[in-house]
Length: 213
Image 1 (cartoon, helix red, strand yellow):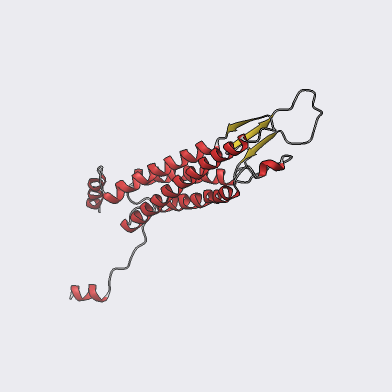
Image 2 (cartoon, rainbow, N blue to C red):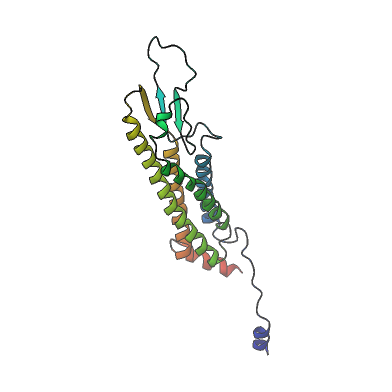
């Protein structure tokens, strides 16, 4: 009779609870992806809002005795290419590469998604989903870092061919920020892999938690 009751009235599915299991791993993963989200977002916004974050900058030297001018002498390259006074430099940076920089907000969105799902690791399905999204975030973040690095190297190479200007090209903080974000995503992915694979003491801790109920 009890068996018939269970067949007719199956147990209602319960949504995973917040921080119900793997508390330490969940918090560590959430922090790692929050840092990645924040970095990708800051680099994605770049020059329009946070002008101190850029890929590389060009500082032009003014010749001695040259009269004052309103032409910019310090130009920074970020997600939005802003050049004033040197129209020939606009063609020095490939527009195709600058378009690819929209991937920064995409990485930020993926990192935010994992940051949210990592708080609900009571469900094994949510753990797997978080791991899959974290892997995608790491892969896309690595691609973004490669694109940023290529943009800087290609930009410096092409601008270096413009010999009619006296300038100094310097690296910006955006490259290293993206690298740090990718590293944090990789750390979070490793933590999620530990949970999904139930290794490094996770299985034993889970069995102890089950015994408490």
